[in-house]
Image (cartoon, rainbow, N blue to C red):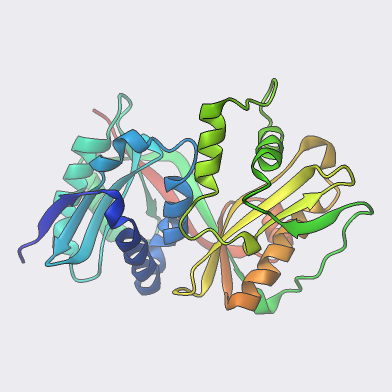
Length: 293
């Protein structure tokens, strides 16, 4: 078949989302790289947008059938084809190696059960690495989504227009950054970009607010009505409010809301007992394979 290679530009964004949605429907082996992970990454403050024109897209006529992209920055990559276009995998992998490697080489995460892709990587001198990704799954109808919150805590969804600084302060503390919270123009512009994600639904981005109006815990869910699942990213609590059940509260409230919109399942990249205590169960496991320069 004759395919057409194109470099990514912003006009292709929705096509990539739809490609990844179809990929996750057809084959759960790529659930770790669903459309929501793409969107979260693409609008994340740490995503190197200066490199995005290096993302490779393969088309048959005007149908997107293959992709190679980096993850935030060079050194890790993802590539895939639609079913029926596996003959492109070798060329796409070689493009990823040539384009996305850094001084340490290139890492690609593969489902442990995907022997075909593992064999392809090994044929290109990739070797198994200690890095892994674990995927947990929750079937929403099988668990209780009720919770109890501490006195003085309000569970609510974020308000993009008014919450930029409050959310930024909470994320800085919750991810254990040290020093004063940076509020310079460049930093805040990146945070604003995160909240401008194309498919972000504030109804599913839940915070716990204390009596002083400060945000102390947060759960973000990503959902498209073209799918039956939500993707959990991120979940965090500031240090002084941990172990009070607030992480559980914001996650369960977000999941309850997602179910009201039609979601049936939830996925998270984690192996944490926290999620397992909420009813998440093992879905799949991915191991990185590494190509050294």
